[in-house]
Length: 262
Image (cartoon, rainbow, N blue to C red; front, side, top):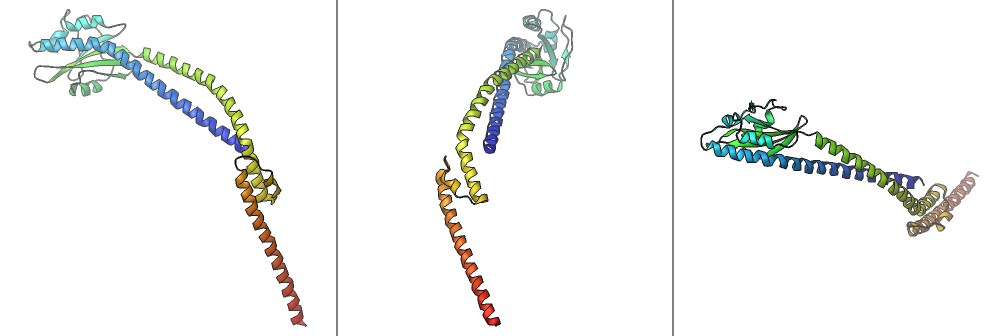
């Protein structure tokens, strides 16, 4: 049963590793889908504001000037933001542009913003510093990046839902793993008993030179053990014959030496 116990432990480790990997993949997939869903809700407002700003830019109105208008497209976008999300306008260097009646600076470092603004990405999102950032780059009539319109929202909702999903996966895993472990233990015990007997019989032949144990062997290794027993029996018989021959030679040599000594 030592071999059966090892196989059982290894099987349980493989099952647990597979469940852990599956749970991790599920959490990552769920987080990605949730992030994309929330980002799309904010991106609709941000991209609409960016299109309005770029249309105004063809008439010579800059992004900074539109940000100063209390009733402009950016102010309208700020009113359309759901929940605690807010609109922040930044220039090409990632520095916030003040908006009338809007307070609060940029809660993250400007470096990732500058990278995306320089690339003139029309729609992008990422998570940083506990916030979900959804942005759209504003390109002026000269084809240069003038800045970006950002929608900033706390990602606590994503974290809370990830934790809830993780707890559910863990609870379901335990509920599923316990019956599987019991069933696997029974299957391994029943399936490995013949194998254990066969291995024990082979060990008896090799270590104890007891060929009679092979005759009673049952299980998947029985034909191999029977063949091994025949081979081992032939070798054992040859060893006995060789030993007897050597004994006879030794006796003969001893007798001849005694004759010669006389």
